[in-house]
Image: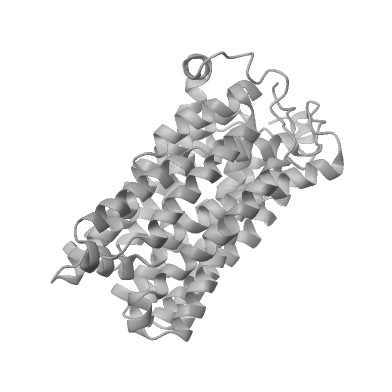
Length: 442
């Protein structure tokens, strides 16, 4: 790389003019995007943190491992409809605008959350209970599959010059905030309630709290300014036209996005699995395992934003690659330490390490990927790639890891999965062009 290129990478260039010109309106829109995104991921991840308890409530079995497998499989069912939501809502955001798409996703998530919070257990209504839970998860998956593309595009397009990394980093930071909130609430409940109370009704409280906040998120999103520009609703007449243009003109970029998103998705869901891992594999108390979840959320929140700042200063590629290589090297010793010396220090410390490195790499990735694409297919492109990856890999990570540990008896299975996918991700990151100094394509 020549000296001129290096200088260009260290000097931000002005972005294409964004539709949102008023600073106060821009900040309100970003807050609305972040709050809504946090609410949606809060509900989706809360299920993972209470997988053991939910398994006993809706999937009773004489074998605790079978019950847990059924529960995490239902968690995975929520990923089946993610690609569908990603395709239709992602393209809808490119046709009609970011705001209507994001209003749709938060409304659908409220419906799914209501079903999870209020469905009686198997002992009360029999097979109807797991059926309703599965339907609720399918609705949530559809909504969340369509949330990431429009909300990330909105953050990128709302950013002032030189701050796209910081603004877009709030996509992953909001997921960390959701994890932190779910973990903190779960920890408080585990300390305040007995095991019997938690199993009977306590696990429903986090979902009910989310329901109470949903109207606030809807109200705030209604006042968001639009960033899709005048072409929304005119440049592409149908969903099929948006997808056709995406595949025809940007298929190679999509192929590059997949392995980058893959490694970030696996490390994220391995981090989210730490609650279940601590209880079932390390045999640690529930309160400590949920504390690990809160630590993961805090690290993702803080270090995603830090990564966004660094990506604005040093470029996307560097911040993607360095933490991912460090995670690749640290995964095996981290899990080995946790299994050989299970306890608060090792669980919390190693969970924080894995979450920190994964968040920094992942946040920079979620900046670079939307910058690959023009505004007319930006939401659809990220939605399709993200939803496909999280369906195939995110939705199966907990199930695969649980199954591998049960079948092989090797508690280090999560580390092997993180290492393998990180190798693939680093190779794709090395082939990724630097976009920091590029103006957004209109």
